[in-house]
Amino acid sequence: MRISSIGIFAIASAANLNAYAQETQNEENKNAISIGVEGREITDEDRNPDVNLDAALMHGIKQLKDAYKGRLDGRGIHVGVWDGGQILSTHQALRGRVRVREKDVERNYHATHVAGTIAAASSLGFESSEGMAPGAQLESYDFCPVTTVEKDTPKELIGAVKRNNRLSVTNHSWGIPRKTYTDMTRDFDDAIFNHPQLVSMVAAGNEGGDLRDPAVAKNVITVGAMKDIMVSGKAVNVAKYRSKIEKTGFSNKGPTTDGRIKPDVIANGYNLLSPSSYKAKECSKKFNVEVNKCSNVSLGDKEESECYRILMGTSMATPVMSGLAALLQQIANETRSGRNKTLRAHEMKTVFIHTALSKDNKPTYENGWGAVSAPLAASVVKAWDKDFKPNDSGVVLTRLSVGDKPTSFKVRRHGSDYVRITATWLDKPGNTLINDVDMVLERESDGKQYHPWALNMFNQSATAMRRKNNIDNVERIDVFTNEDMSGSDWNLTFMRTKGSDTIDLSLATSGLELADEP
Image (cartoon, rainbow, N blue to C red; front, side, top):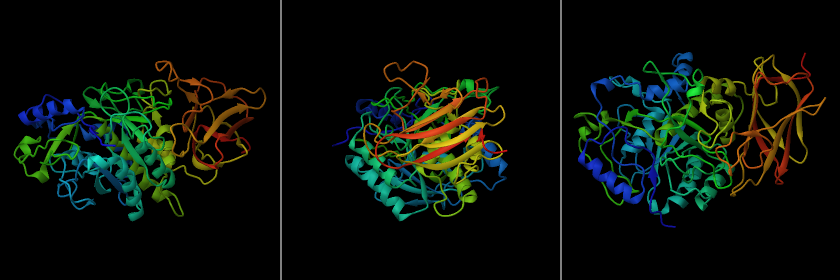
């Protein structure tokens, strides 16, 4: 299939200031492509802007890094960036940490901006442009030629992870304007199912409507964009202001065609300052724009290695989560023992969804499961145990094998804590679930049950309800602090209800302890 339109997900953050930008935007509108060479000039007020820093503050990423006193920066973690061209490897904020894997395409401003949000080092005058994981290594790939993107990209993912077994996060801030389950969706799901070390982050898209492909895939982590949360002009942590968590108007939303909850999470993607490049040439365009001055990009008359620009979009939200994923991979490497210490794709999704916050702690088709809190996510990663043994704080991250017989644990509430239980699994390719697990929390004495949240694709504005969920390969139970969970005779049970495979389940719980403990 020939691709007529691929969107790279950024949009202008202010009025276009250059004639070429307007010309490019007009051409985009003809081709339904959601990005151009737009942006805004960076003023003196932006010399220390709260932009990338905003994202780090809102998700608690800065607080998490500060707690590690410089030891947490993504070092040792390799992140693959698939985009419309090369990352500018000579940029002052990225130099020495980019390996360009495909060298027959031009360097690209969008790819460089995405890479910077993931891993830019702090630069003089632009300290607030530091990426989420400034010590991570970047692998630069592109999806060119655009006519073969559907077949080539999933194959490149597999080849990349085979070539570099340290590649544990991949970023895809692009998509094709269709929400159906296509051959490319299938290939993404297949690649991740068979190579679960691929934690693939995919942008939801910027049209304010249906999700794009491959954001509809079951095994990727789909990221939408959220509005800034500001108090007195300063970015504030989502953990303290969850009532203000809301997607932007441009961010695409679910459901998928089979009713699954997407996006998985939303993240800050509004006005992020990040490294850029002169080149605005993209293989997805029928036209090319080449810029030879930094002043035509964003920032004065600077060398290309000192260029920065401000963009917003789900293109920008996705690398915020990719950068956080790199930090969590570093924590996993340092706290887990044995082989394969990094988080698998379903483990990362479990951690993200388990620590996602929202207004009422219920999922929606607009916001997914909410906005991730980095400190909470790190605490879950550090609570890893190969067995289901919640720690002294009532938290555990583990893996279960669910086969022909149900798996059950006797549990009780940890004090009066809020209870959250999240389970995810990687599913085989298919436009509906091939393997399904039902999770239920039940009191033996009277049969009282708590079921996972589920949404109704035929009434998309309806509030999430507790019931059996046979649509998503994610299940989450929340028991609020004012809800009854008295007694110590509760069973947490997992039962395979569809398929014949033994399912490798990733499980996180908070607010629970084993009932047979003293």
